Length: 231
Image (cartoon, rainbow, N blue to C red; front, side):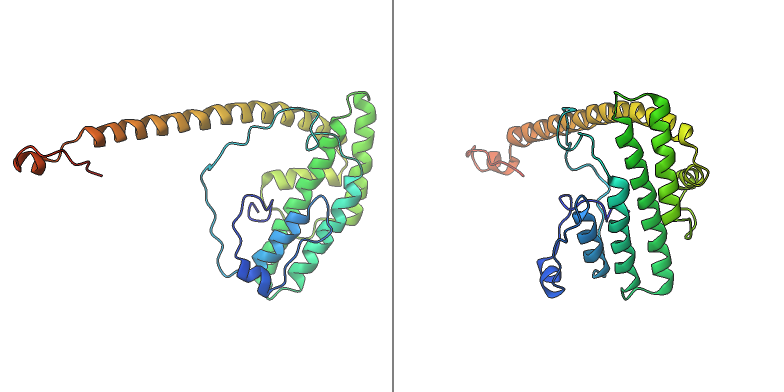
């Protein structure tokens, strides 16, 4: 599912884009998701790098990406309807389509979680009122998208159960807990990644120093000529 999220963290083949006439569609806020899905459906092989390449340290609760967004529960269905349509009309086998439908359903449930998190950004409303809003979100989501594809993992199953039975209080407090865990996790992750980068830089500096100070024995044997750097 990571392959489908975002476009700025990927390398694309211009040949595939031009030959298949792929373009970003008007699907804000997930035009990159639809583009990546279209691109992936035309690929024979996809390579995923499972290492941290850089650290994106985001700060400022008043930024555009962190400010509260309204009406996502009405926007996401259009996005995922388009995603399911793309898969349905693709050249994948029935088994591959079924697997991808399950991934898309998982991502759609994740988007519901995003809608819940947006409600939690409202600090001027009581917990009871927010839970009522979450209950409405559950009703609207389940009416449009009942579970048809199974469950990707335990979190996917639990979210589906909460949506089906409108456990708004559970979703509210789980959301609150998730915010705290995520904040702690990213602080810890940034520190670890910075430490790893520092260790790598120290190792490189040490290795470079050894290379510079290493004298080619052959140059000494040839009468003490100027030492050559050995790389």
